[in-house]
Image (tube, rainbow, N blue to C red):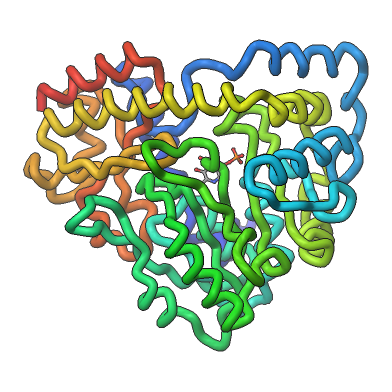
Length: 393
Ligand SMILES: Cc1ncc(COP(=O)(O)O)c(C=O)c1O
């Protein structure tokens, strides 16, 4: 047989190999280490929501292709949620699209809204699918780096750097707040400045708000769509995975103007068309859970954050206390680490814990060279054990 002269993987995707998550999870399995690498909870979400999915399956709701935009019950529940929490009104028929997790919402948005050659600004470090999706859309990624504020120990957005990153080719800003992996929650002032820039330069904003309910202390999640001039230029994305601890259901959604929704739906219908029929009915019920559910989720995770951050601090890390998400970013430099990737590869052997090196979330890996990310969406006993193990360092 003649040898193949062309590489199987196309040029757009060639830079994207196996993710670090696969490598680190395999390491966790091989060494029996506590896996704080990947961000999924170790307990399932509310039993009544699980039962709602079972009921839908039994009653034959969603077992066949659901409607392309999502089942009406879920679309209505999404609009009620946006109104109740944020005072934002959307039409369930023309301004909502149910997707296969937030991941598909991001992918379909970029495929629909970006022309080859368009520039897409993303906050660095960023969630790993963003770079691949911008590449698949033929866009050019323009990172704007979040940097630790020496005073507050928080990663902040440099608004001058953001302004300077906008060119005549910029199509959109891909925002993520609360932010994975830094745990930063963009403030009202920061969001107002991003919004003003988007209006001034006629940019779209695609905003990934999957951690909207996971905010702690006095932090407040504010959707950028609520700022003047933004509703018509923003695609707001969220998902049931993080809020309700059902990451395997992959039910996500977006809200946007009819024009933007129709554009994204055009791409989405040729990716998956639809998915997760019975789960959509269950997520509709989840979105209507009382405020007490969301408050207890926050309190539970804040307590877990404290266990892990105290453990990391005691072990000698420089900890950036997250105000949102279920991740903490910590600097291993005070422990003598010079390279986070090598540090994370050695960590299971040294103390039986798996973390992720933040360098993989950067276009400028030197900026996050000694930073590591750990997830605290695990049982308190697991986190206490992890803290004890880290103390061995
Ligand atoms: C910022 C961010 N966006 C999207 C996702 C994926 O969401 P989903 O599972 O709903 O596709 C994650 C999961 O880790 C994430 O951290």
